[in-house]
Image (cartoon, rainbow, N blue to C red; front, side):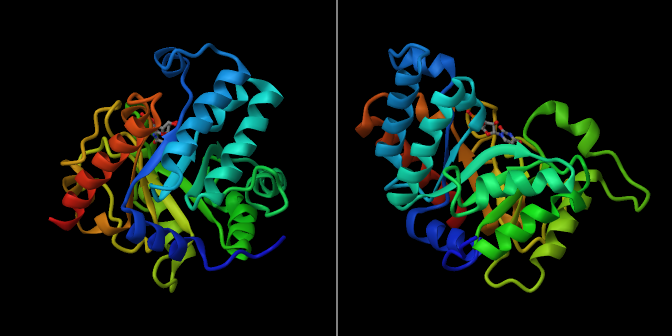
Length: 281
Ligand SMILES: O=c1ccn([C@@H]2O[C@H](COP(=O)(O)O)[C@@H](O)[C@H]2O)c(=O)[nH]1
């Protein structure tokens, strides 16, 4: 295990300051492949994903490949994912691998080694994890992330409508499940400056005021912009004073402008400029 530079919180803050607060998802949906004139083969997957990397990795703060869309193609798809991660990082983007893993501790160690260890071909800057087996079960991933200067981003209050029933349920301490995840992440980040390595996912599709994010001291990944109905203009209402820690994310909203590299870049720049205006308002 090799330690990389500064911690993930600091690296993310620097990237957002330099390139703007935008994370673009690399989600090779079958419908997007078709819209780009591509078929559903590993060669087309590679063409799609590497075009997105070429257009965006030198421009935006974070790229977030969605592992599922690569896994569809088996080992050929995973090989493309390896290339996406390596070349995006080489071009200066931070890579958050959206894999949403979560398991008992011993297996969690293996997942963390797969996605966060420097020597793994799939090592990203951060991975998404599911806390459904309990926040404590994520400890191996938190440990490896902290030691290697990487991040872990924990599902808290997701962007999809089906998440509400489970995530808004109230526990014995009268905290919602989502709030208890935010509170646990806040404990992991305590004392970190400028912010810690444990992020949470909170959808950009939510109404404001549901969660207290004031003590988190970590990144807030906010998917759901565009295709899922979340709006850039609505971000301040959703996140309030936590907005400086928010990393807004969109995949289809940017990728639908392909397959031209220049068109993708222009769409990302426009999106980023809209976000900067809202963050600075
Ligand atoms: O709460 C969540 C957590 C993750 N996602 C992922 O983000 C992208 C969203 O894609 P869009 O095209 O911008 O809708 C996708 O990979 C999801 O798995 C999320 O949407 N919500």
